[in-house]
Image 1 (cartoon, rainbow, N blue to C red):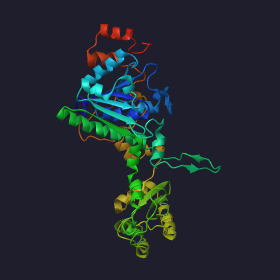
Image 2: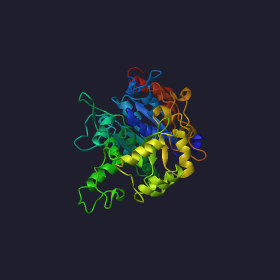
Image 3: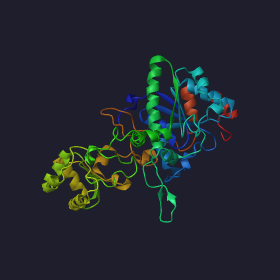
Amino acid sequence: MGDSREAPLAGVRVIDSSLLGPGATGMHLADLGAEVIKVEAPGGGDYVRKMAFPIIDGISLLHWHVNRGKRSIVLDLRQPTAVETYLALVRESDVVIEAMRPGALERRGLSYERMSAVNPRIVYCHVSGYGLSGPYRDLPSHGYAYDAWAGVARPQVDADGFPYIPAYTTIGIHAGPLYAALGIVAAVLRARSTGRGCELEVAQSEAAAAFNWNGIEGDKAHERPEDEVTGNDGDGKPGPRRPMGGETMREAVRYQFYRSADGFVLFMASEQVFWRNFCEAVERLDLFERWPGARVAEHARGNVELRRELAAIFATRTTAQWITFSQQHNVPIAPVNDAHSLAADPQFRERMPWLPHERHGTDLMPSPIRWLGAGPAAPARAPVAAGADTEAVLREVLGYDDQRLAQLRAAGTFGAES
């Protein structure tokens, strides 16, 4: 994947105080070549290693994924010498990440003010569930909570009347670290040009809401009069309003899932030009002549007769044949995968080669950021044991010798078990 010396964040040092999934903030920076030092508590460190399944060689996939590319040190921040050591690392670093409940570091005497006093260029980023303010600030939570709050994860009800969490792709716990990493990179750029660091925060709940912007902002728009805010002209002119979010595409026909001969495809001919291309290519121009629809944003909503016609047509070819058809005739048709079939998809196989378990603890997908030419080296394996790099980091970064390390060990800086 290229020479790590050419990595875009080479020379950026990050102190990562994170627990569980929000540790992905540091992972994104490590993927781009930053040196990320994860500071863990004694007694086993971040319990992410045992949290969530599957467990691979005794360590959770969650840990293998979000802590890849990092080094691990153990500091018992209940001890003054450990706080002093943390501040010494801050002096030699660019970024501190607090990805846990708000105020965890400040309660140990590691406030932004104290950190910026030793390093005015430090960028201090908080990643939390609901942010540093508001009535939910201290609400205990996990990843699904942020999507439920943001209107993304809505309960389904089973045959016995019990509500349950449906299958869906979680957002807040993934989007939050991405926004945080983006903010960190911007802040480091400014700090390097001005000499001034800053403090910033990202709430994973708000990141989920940001990804749900269309539903939330659309609902807000519907508070305005109907002559000011309408629906798509494809549903008539002016288009009727429809509820935002939910199953708004359930009755769509020209933008819909269809069964192929061996699976499913997604048909997306909402533009008239694509619809005509399709009808001509399958030798059913009669369908276009009967239902030409609007020029754009046409879903043929509720047209059950057309839906049956299309279902019969799509059932005649395999998914792979429809993808070939799509490229030959300029018709938007996409393959439909699940987590298992995606790995065999030719597009996935070409562009997302696995980071192998022999080197990374388990098979991991690479970062979706692709460098055209030289880029960052593959991330290092996530540390199996908390504190695996404590002595090496303190020697390399702070220049501590055997005598200083022995003094810190005797003072309980690394925990009682050290």
